[in-house]
Picture: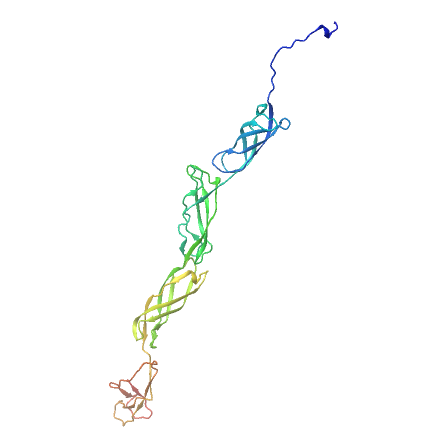
Length: 349
């Protein structure tokens, strides 16, 4: 219980070790979106909290997405941080920092292209816009992945024409051994060199018989076949000819011109072609002409019908330009009966 008096004591200092521990930093993380590249690597930047005064530090950050595949709002985790000296006296050794911080970012599909897409830019009209395509090599896939493409092409419309636009669209398909289609995207392809040529029609021909008229013109009807889908077109203004103008049976008739006209169910004449040259047969029969002003002589009853022609008159009805004459050498003429009478009919055969 005595009283402490400072003058009764002295202080002696002994050497020892003092420790200054690094200051622990906290941080927020920002990660960049990226295009699918087949790995989980992420690019992240940290914003520090807890630096002393105006000091700054540098950083090298390693981060990864939860997986490599395309997606939005994917978790990104910081799994390594290396601090480096900064400005305003900021020394990396004076600070510590823990990994494990997270944020989110997107992985977007990688664009691939396809080559040799068109088998042919030309087809015969078939009533559809379908263009035949083949799916060749995809360019831009991550090495080792074997995603494929399926799809088809379409002309701008179904009708005949040149310089037609063709659009080719695709669906990507997961690879058999590696690669998800959802990690890629492929753009439509277009070309402007499409050609649709007219569809050839076939036909059968029927021709009408006619009476001799001094020319070879024939009247025909065509029965067309070979249309696309349910369409039809009509054949009009067709012309055809007999082999010659003269009377005969089963004479060859040849079609020498055909004009197509629009038909039913969307059938446009411009989408079809047809060749001339089809044949059939028909008859040309003799033309009847008249013998005018025929005069017979009167006679005394002789028990026969025999008549004597005093004048054969003229022929009427021959085709202009044709010269027709009577051969009376073997002509036979007869009254209608042998009996006496007036105004009796005489027939020449």
